[in-house]
Image 1: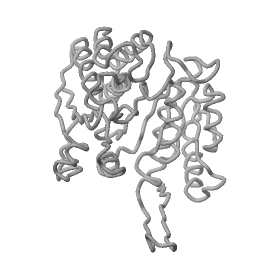
Image 2 (image 1 turned 135 degrees about the horizontal axis):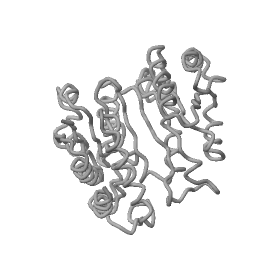
Image 3 (image 1 turned 90 degrees about the horizontal axis):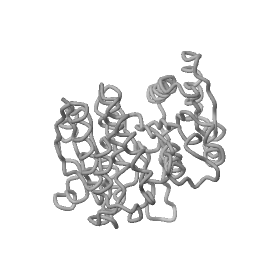
Image 4 (image 1 turned 60 degrees about the horizontal axis):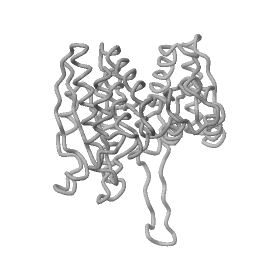
Length: 349
């Protein structure tokens, strides 16, 4: 029995999650597995109503589930950072979801903004460290609001945090068995403390994986090469801040946010899966948002939740079929409604 916590969240989040659950029902019937859903109303509407971001005991309650399925967090009436820090970062840190996993794959039939690049050229995975770096929020202000103000934010890296992320990336590279190439993306020439640790740990762990080739890019060079020659990449491992940036670049070269999915992974605990595109409040209730990223996130949930890899592969295959029928991946331009796209994927199963 697969126990799933569902957080529809804000904006179009509940709409795309509904289509993902429609697909879950179809694939569960096909593969004859059972699941339960428990819904949580965490998000902007709850915060505006109660003043609570996450109620007391919420994190401990979520630990009891096999996975969390998230729609989106972000409300136009809530100041930036309140929900993102209070829900997304809080869950990532408290549930120790130390890997942010972002597949970057161009599907056949999807327009790519890169000239002469096709599905064979864009098929890699970014492993982003997810619980350290600038996102820890270590720092503060002095003389705030004056012309003498000083603001600091510390780029934190620990040996334990770096080593477990790097090791996960090596294992994934070996398991993918594609090019068996793992590229560290950092900025060792300038960030000579935190990223020196990344460099040393990367090379130390590499000795245990002689079958995996290694490479290194400065993050600015990586941004250039991802546009010029994305076929160079198989698996990328990178610190939290740089991973946040390059995964959005990756989403664009695979066709846009409408197809980009991600997982916040704790290999030994509960993980959380989500579409990358955000809450898109201007499209709320219009039945025009693309649900394929949320459906892709569901496939990731199945793949990482035990013995359901074949079910996940079937969902991915159904998405690949349906995406060829869409006029565009953009909201309102697909040629179909949100609910129609979800039904098409479910019926393809």
